[in-house]
Image (cartoon, rainbow over all chains, first blue to last red):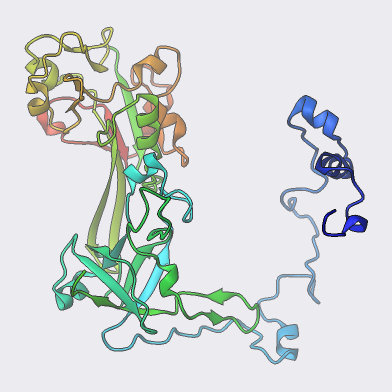
Length: 219
Length: 179
């Protein structure tokens, strides 16, 4: 109201907003305060029924592996594999992912989950480790193709990653001091992702297009 | 002796550690100590690999060397079953059981007595599953008695290839892994 936006807020206060919102779905604030949880029956089926005639929103009404619509727009009508760019000499594909103990970057400061997985490691193939004289538990920093250097992170030598790539779990290397457990523990994959690639058809972004090398001095 | 068993499907386990968290909160296990833990085992060379996650704990052996090794009777079987418990009031913290356990399942609590997995006997008494089993998000863990062939654990062991850890010790361990 102080901002002079009364005409966009025709309610007395926010409880009225919530009451109005609940009325839109067939309930009210009074009812929800009374019962807490309300279930509504599904109006649409969760899955297609057996032999159900379901038309997909395509010209043929079916799933189209070969799309005339894409061809008309000048795209490949069939999905075509584009190999990734090869890593520069001395660099490795930066592959990141999630670990089941943690949820995104939000749980690394949880005291119990911290005990299960306190830090992330950079997974290194034994062949790569031999080239760089790295052993399990060594601290390194990662430097990407644009010169960004990560927080220090321990090496995990494992066959679970190939010799042309390294892997690290997402969600670590926090920079907030208030995260007393997770502060500066492990390295952040996100800060090393300075480049993305965009799929020309869907516009979705690929972020596993960055390369890193090891900084082994003064870590 | 009635036999309780845990059957864990390693093909479903994703190694999330929820069994560890459930145990720590249910049994108030002190920081830095664990009654259960998850191993990650990888064999082979990239890219031909075999990886297994294995949730491990006390195997509740029906011929438990820890019970035999205990000089005070603190380590004992619960009510004529294979569930091995430690009586804190009788434990002197001598650690003979820790040396006798083939599975490294025991530890000394800060109070000075030995502790370990109890198969959550306080829950089993009420007809509940152990905390780790009840919390597992992939439902890869099962618990029950082997004396009745119709229980889930009996049927799983009858229908799937199962192994236990170090049965050659003669301890008759009762945590089984489906692979």
